[in-house]
Amino acid sequence: MSKTNFIKLLTLSFLTILLLCLSFPPADLGYLAWIALIPWFVLIITEEKYVYLNALFLGAVFFFIQLSWLRHVAVIAWVLLGLYCSAYFLAFAFCTRFIIFKLKWPLVVIAPCIWATFEFIRSFLLSGFPWFFIGHTQYQYLPVIQVADITGVYGISFILVMVNAAIVDLIIRSFASRKISPPYVGGEKGGGKNVSKRVFLAEQYSQCQPPGRRLIFFGLTCVLPAVLLTAALFYGYSWLGHYKPLEGPAVCMVQGNIPQDLKFESTEEDQIQILKKYSDLSLGTKGAQIDLLVWPETMMPGLLNIDPELTGRKIDVLSQLTAIQLAQELNTNLLLGGIALALAGEEQIYFNSVYYYNRVGKLLDRYDKIHLVPFGEFTPLKKYFPFLANLVPYEIGLTPGQRRTLFPVDTHENGNFTFGASICYEDTVPSLIRRFKKDGADFMLNVTNDGWFRDSAELDQHLAIMVFRAIENRIGMARAANTGISSFISPDGAIYDRLSDRTGKYREISGTLTNRIRLVEKYNPLYTLCGDWFAILCTAATGIMLFLAIFKSGSFAAGGGLT
Image 1 (cartoon, rainbow, N blue to C red):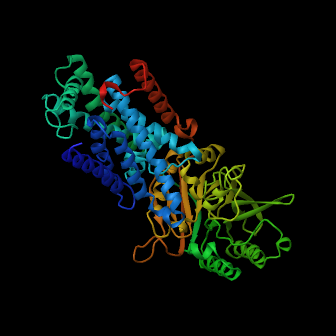
Image 2 (image 1 turned 135 degrees about the vertical axis):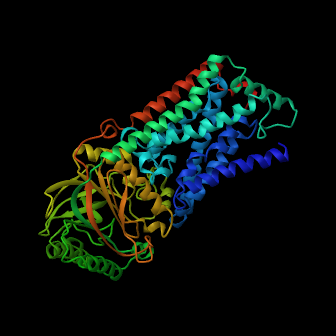
């Protein structure tokens, strides 16, 4: 590779990395996502060598930067997860390049399907990591993302990638139609490889194509993205124009801002102080008409489901008394995040749970977290590879729950409702929130302790993803977070309230946030009814394109010498 071409390759790669990083929180320049992939797509189409190595490099740098908050928990998890996610960039580059050079189809048709396919696969494979989907960058642009109640977030990603791909197709076609090599094409000037590339581009994109094919190309490249984006915007503005929110329960989120270092290695005295801080913040709302008061994930330091006489721990006695007294004194229902213990013979089984108390202080039910975080709450394959236990921050492993619990809540003014609770990252799992909605939940609460990641962009990224769960299922949502960002989200995806101090700081602060849940008249949108049908359709289309490309070539070798 010449020095000039090497510089061009690095420049285009880092340009995509920069634009992608700026598209996601904390920069939150989501409009950059509409052009962020253009430099990289140009490389995929036009580079002779190092295409796949470059894709792996680009993905690794992007994910290492965006996942930097994982270093606060485990550096090895940061590295391994970054490498795992970057493999999807490599797979995208391979499939896209292979299909394009075998079938001679434009990028605008191929790239969106493949991109949505790999986002979908990443959402569930190996327990799933539905984070950093390119569609998430649009969470602030409500008209654009309303279509998520039909397609899920994958539809937003599809349109974004299609726009990027269409621009690339037009750029390459503009050079090829004049039968000159784009300045970014690999190979030395005047060399044989450059000529072969130029010949391919002329055949694929130039005006010398048959009129019928040129018309199809124009339709796919210029008309299709415009039509889909216009349709999405029309649907979005139409839905927002008819949206009339209904008022639900008055909910108070308590945010204690307990440092994770203190909570993780706490003494009994530390636990008592944590309990006191959350209790004092809760009592500060006395006199307000609150229907439900919520503590974040694991902020109740004692066990609430075991007789304290069996444990002999002072903190368990104090925790249970505090829950009863708060419910009675505040005349409100309580949802408290804590650990649950179950005894199976001599074995002790622990759950990450939320406990629900009624207004008289009676424990009614609890929900045990179903979707546990691998190497965060449990150790996969621990039986066969004991050393993997060293990667888990807890000494004990947690057990997943088995049922989706719905809680009834009575209100002072608006009647009775039913809600579900998700814990920690469960609100990033589309299928789980969808099932709660199908079960009959009127709204959803999320309790989380993002204190693991301190004052990092993880808190903003987590909140951005939650927006799509609200839109997909047209359900009001609210979050109680230990260090932030405690917030309320309406069924149209608007973040209409969040806890902040007088200076505007909203991370690593303490306080309470009270507002009413916003609802719509109860119905199940298409996404709730049919789930990830759009992503499955994209996956099927990708499979068909790969089959046709393989069938045409008769082998897995990359075509035309363009490997």
